[in-house]
Amino acid sequence: MKAIYARVSTEEQAKHGYSLNGQIASCQAKAGEGPFEIYTDEGVSGELLDRPALRQLREDIRGKTITHVICYDPDRLSRKLMNQLIVTEEFDKCGVELVFVNGDYAKTPEGQLFYSMRGAIAEFEKAKITERMGRGRLEKARQGKILKNYQLYGYNYDPERGQIVPHPEEAAVVQLIFDLFVNPRPGIEGINGIAKYLTQLNIPTKRGAKVWHRQVVRQILGNETYSGTFYQNRWQTEGMFANKYKSIDDKISLKERPEEEWIPVPCPAIIDEETFTKAAQLLAASRRRWSKQSKHAYLLSGMLRCGHCGNTLTGEKTKYWGRENYVYTDRKNYSGAKQKGCGRRISCETLDCAVMGALMTKLDDPDALRRFYKESSSDDAAGERKVLDQELSRLHQRRARLLNLYADGGLQLADVKQALKDNDLNQAECRHRLEMLADNEIEGEPADDEKPLQSMIQDWHQQLTFADQQTLLRTYIKEIIVNDNELTIQSF
Image (tube, rainbow, N blue to C red; front, side, top):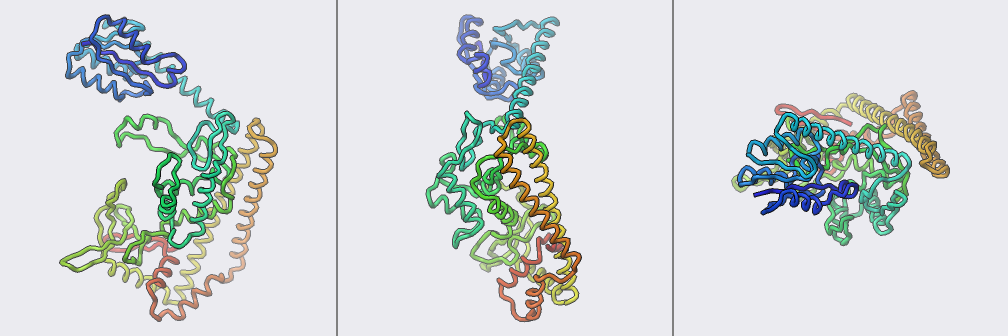
């Protein structure tokens, strides 16, 4: 039996006319009389060796009586020389004759040399095409154009201008999402609550799905595009197009490029800068704010992490001989969990008492209380200074990028003036806050926040409610690392 293999990618079909039907017809004319077994890969790059039809052909050659494989050109087998040689060697070992319409293949030293040269040229040509396309995309991005339709919820894509424009109905939903997150309503708490609420309202997602996933809501809340800046060249996606043909272990993950390589493109804002910044701050603390709700309240919810496997510990009810027990465990049984956990289980009562006892001992001592507060305040100030310094650096880089885009003709003067004005205002706010932090350090006076804390300690020995205990813990403890024989309590 004779087999015909044909392959085409969308780009090649458009530019060179390598249609599948054309290749198959040419192969049939070259092969003469049939019967033929036809294998086709459509829209698959020649860089890949693991292609569905080629994989099937290789398997059939091992198990069927295929005597000839006819292909239009060697670069239809692969655009990488090494892959061409691998496939050719497999065919030779199985006694299969390889025939090309466009060129001859001979098992002679000269034939092998010519075949290898053609493969090397095809690989070089593919590399040059990839390099030219990448350079062209970057140049368009620097001119302020958005290269393709990224299917951003809240926007439509205008291919003629290379810009995104607000989609009125979707933009209103985006504003609702931010409002519900920044100003929670009763019964609609956290990212998961917002996702459920949108699903109940029968609002479709961008791709028309009826159910909103919390990860989609999280992505919207963290996307800077909605505040007026779309970043191109932010993500390293090289090689990811082939992930659908690879095993889980071989898939290439998305990686963020260094910030100086990002290309900012001003776009219509749906959310004001103040709302977006507040949402970003709440998003960073969302695990603590909206820890998993359950029928039983767990004192240390959202605060525990296993020191061995790194998983968070969550509360769980178990039954032993008919008796209910509550434990903290690091086991993750839900679909998609990256780390299943090492199986650590600790009684809630034991761990709650240990943590509360440690905190009460520290706060019961007035001197220790002052040291604890000053250390916490100092750490807070240092952390805020670090964030402000990073923000100033980012704003400085953004200013330089805007000026470069204007110099290259990528932005209009009016757009640049407004963007620079907003940028300078943000820089001034950061500098003002840094000056306030410096003044507080010089004065050395106790902060006003210490007064309510001191008032709380005066009535320390009164019975604290569960809510009081949880508020106290979450105010002064950032995270608790649970090891085999000790607890590591990290304060704010």
